[in-house]
Length: 296
Picture 1: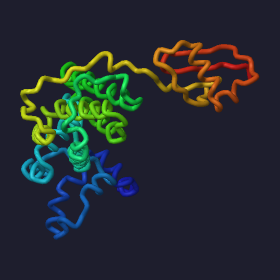
Picture 2: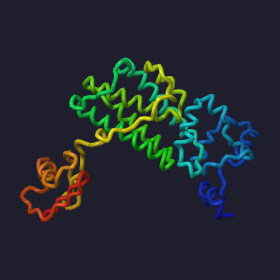
Picture 3: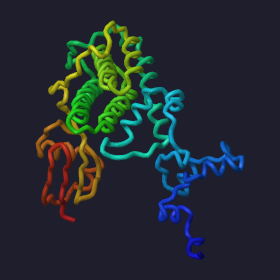
Picture 4: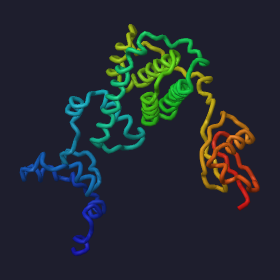
C-alpha cells in the first residue's frame, strides 16, 4: 500500500490503465462540482485521455460539437487528427485548432477580395513576377501535387490537409508587388478552395461565390500542377566547416560545387573560418549541403 501511495498519481493511473475520465464526471455531479472542475487539465496532468465510452460519460455529442464549431470544422478535424488506419483521441484543443484555421482561411480570402476578385490569373507572365511571387506560385503547384498524392495514393488525409495549411501560412506573409503577383495570389486562393472543397464544402462554396464565381465548386475540374512552376530558381543550403554549420548561402538551383564554393567564400561568417587555411576536401550534396574540410 505504501508503494502505491508514494507513486505519482499519473504513473499509478497509467500502470492500471485508468484515466481520470473513469466515472469522475459522475463523482463531480454527485458533489455538485460539475462545471467547476477543469477535466481537460486533470486529464493532461494526471492521466491518459480516456477512450470514449457511455459508461464513463465522455462520449462526444456530434450535434453539440457541430452547433458550436460547424460541420466543416468537425469534418476537417476528424480527417486531420490522424491517418485513417489509426485511432485518434478526441481532444478539444484539436478541434479548436481546426476551427481557428477555417477562420483564418475565411479572413484571408475576404480580406483580399478587393484586390483579386476581378483579376484573371490565366496567362501569368513569369518574367514579371517578383521573387516572392515566383516562390508562392511554386508553393501553390507543389501543394496541388502533394495533396493529390496524399489523398489519392497514400490516403493520408492529415498530411494532405497540412499541405494546404502550409500554403495559407505562406500566403499570409505574401505581399504582392506586381499585377502578376496578384494573379498568383488569386490562383493560390482558388486552388485552396478547390482542394479543401471535398472536406469543408460549406465554407469553400461560400468563399467561391464571394469571389464572384457563377459556377459551383463541384462542377469545377480538379486543379493540375505545372511542372515548370515546380522548378526552383534558388535554394538556401547550410555550409559546414569541418562538420560544423557556419552559415547558410543562397545558390542557383542545380549549382555546381564550384559555384556553391565561390558563393560560400563571399559569406563573411564562413570566410573567417577558411581564410588562410589549407582546404583538404569539399563535400557537396547538390541543393542540400556544402561541407568544407580545412586543415586545423
